[in-house]
Length: 456
Image (cartoon, rainbow, N blue to C red; front, side):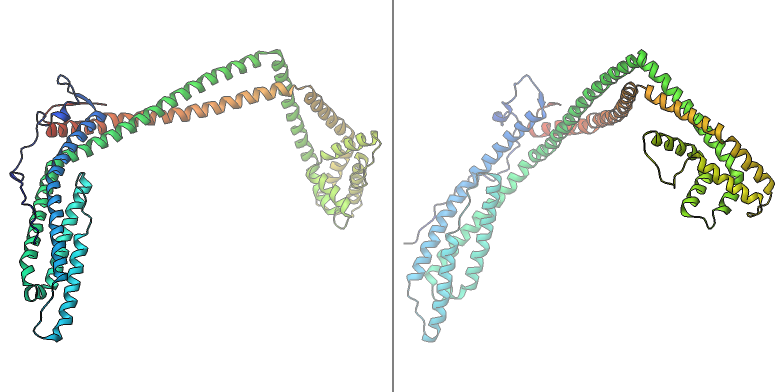
């Protein structure tokens, strides 16, 4: 027998409902005491979620009967498909029978496939949307099936045509009712959803400000630590530099600096002394051995090294060591100077103003002993002072000063970062967040009908 689906009873479902006031949504409003209108952003979001859940519940309760009716209709269509499959089709001309049978087979198979579709239970927003989409898709597919095989239904299966059409019309009615329910739900829910969006952004901003404030606190703690460290380093440095050991070491360092200046002046004096004979030394180097050429080069560029080499030669001789002929001692350099002097005097080397050059050579050769003595005195003084200097005290002082410099750099960087953080927090709290809070209070008032003050 033909299965009749139960009649749908929606009553006044689609009559326009008034917005629910706090008195209507007592379950949601009960979250706050009647004498309090202050809410944290988190509590406000909980309140909105409660209100939204109530609206979702209303929507679900309206859609579930439609789903039940749809299930019954699909069962009915399934039975019609079985009846159509079992019925013997009569055709006037036998040659059309294969085509008719094929069309019937396709139609029955399509109907059975569609009625076996899984229909979502609309208990949440996402499931309700899926239910709406499933119903729309079902209508489209049934329309395609009935359109493709309309000739079969109207010509060879007339007794099923009215039944099928009736079921399809009922599904179409269910679809329209579902669309109206969903349209009303979306419109009714929109202020709540918008308010949730506003407060969610405000909540995120609150979290952002709190993170910045935590970073600010960490930075202030680090600055305090660095300031305490700076005081400790300064105290240690002050105690060290007041000690007799440091005073003695500092005095030695100053004496070393003076001795180094004396050595620098001596090197300059020697450079000036040998400069007038450098042209003669250069000419004499042409065609000489590599060893002689190197020694002449040293006389022209760094003449003070002849005294250093002489001293090294003496020290190594005292230790029983011997240097090769390339290095030589002071006497070998004196002999070399005498040879070049002779070459200029005899005219072997021709120079403009050779008389002056000869006198410079004589001055250099005559002053070598005194110059050597002066070089030794400076060198011995530097060596003695270096041995006397307390490197540990000086090193500790330099280390403390380096730590103080690094500490100052760290403090300056942290204070700059602190200032930027304070400005960013001020901007977010006083401008962006306050604006979000005002928007949140306004939308809460629109949704609930009550005036709330949001606390952050």
